Image (cartoon, rainbow, N blue to C red; front, side, top):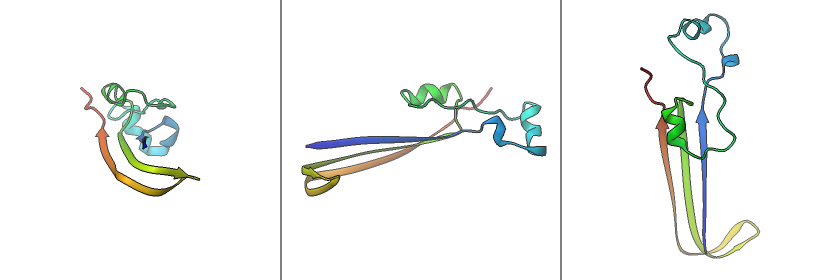
Length: 93
């Protein structure tokens, strides 16, 4: 049986995270805050194109096993793989 899973983390800057004089570039338009990301990422590339995050890390993994018991693999039979990738935000015009 093959078991697959994926997880994505997004980095974003909410307005309340910036305080004091470091707000200046944001207030004059040299930088921008990010709106909160969605609870579930369905289309990472669409979020990237909409400039909704600074960067994203994606980890995909699968394993093929004869048995899966109490959350641990008892016997790994065919193989496994993990793959990570990073997406950065799009450039603002």
